[in-house]
Amino acid sequence: MNKIIPYGKQYIEKSDIAAVTQALKKDKVTTGPYVKKFENKISQFVKSKYSTVCSSGTAALYLAFQSINLKKNDVIIMPCITFVSSYSIAKMFGAKVYLADVDPNNGQMTPNDVIDCCKKYKIKKLKLVVPMYHGGYPVNATNFKKLKKKFNCYIIEDACHAFGSTYKSNNKTFKIGSCKHADISTFSFHPLKSITTGEGGAVTTNSKKIYNKLEIYRSIGIKRSKEHWKYDIIEPSLNFRLSDIQCALGISQLTKINKFIKKREQIAKLYNKFLINNKIEVIKYDKNLKSAYHLYLLKIKNFNLRKKDNFLKFMKKKKIYIQYHYIPIYKFKVFKDKFIGKNAKYFYEHTVSLPIYFELSRKKQKYVINSILSFFRK
Image (cartoon, rainbow, N blue to C red):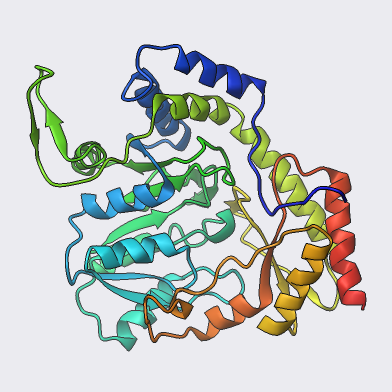
């Protein structure tokens, strides 16, 4: 292969470029009509009452935490394998963050992991649980709501991998973001996700109270009156706005999301078909779940970090850039967290993510598969 094969990549076509061009010709390129239109489209897609778009998935998490009045010493539980954003933001708010272990099969925190964490650290008052749907599979989406009742806490779904994912409950199908079993869902529209706005994110909820806060916090805490020159600052915040240009791209991309996810699913099925031998394990998920396939996670038996690094170096020489996803939070020096999850350690050492994106051709994917198999034949 002459060109590098990344683990993920956006897909932009002529209709997307045309949509952005049209937005650039409008009087307003920010805080204009495309923002509300995109938010309405998102709500219609996920079946939520309210949507607020923002500048990134990280911004979405920040706004979500701010909207529930997260404050110093509030207790949060989240998985030790997650992207660093949620942990960093919680620390910035001064919250007490406890890391829960994960399912060694799929790298996701379970409700039982949360309960075990509470027992281990003798947590009596819990403010927030933040499940993260690693790779795009909404594992345990229904069961986390039981924790809400048990602990009287908020559930904020870090669904930055899961825009377009669905799950079943009582013979009904729900989209992640519908917030039928959570207070808030957060999404990312980074170029590697289901759809892209360049950078961007969204928060969905069914709570009018939370939504009203999100709208104010997104724009520096400003509340405007009917007269455009009069406004007040309700609470200090930052600028997390998404421009009309980006929203125009998002609206265009959203019309193609089913096509994008279907292609990713086909790629995943081809990996499942050919990457099965005595050294490779394909992760199995509940059939009631439909993934957005942000990542394709592959587990390698009898691996350790040294062997894993050798594998990544081998693939890099083949111009195939696979990834870790993720280094556990407790391994970062800046956080100095002493927690070590036994299952998280296993998942970290044994799992890699393979290329999966709309433009990945069958020829390139076969090259990836053959390269992986050749490594294990050595």
